[in-house]
Length: 72
Image 1: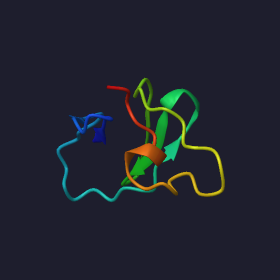
Image 2: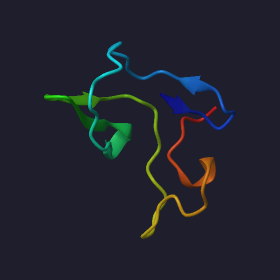
Image 3: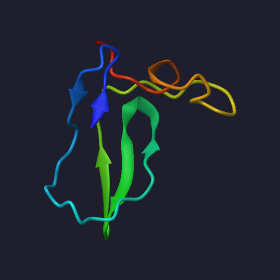
Image 4: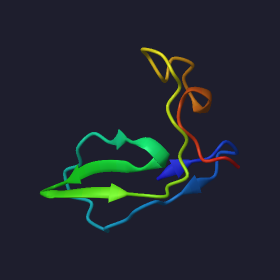
């Protein structure tokens, strides 16, 4: 689930399994996301997410301004 700059939700992926164990997410070039769900590696392409802010703490501004967002 992602949130755009107008605070609208976008579901990127759903497996319908509330008991799955998810790893940390890795945001790659071009908005690609990689993460593990139980024993599977999932790679989501074309998410529309922008890159993280530059710097040692990419979310330092907190909220949407410092996080990758889908343009409204």
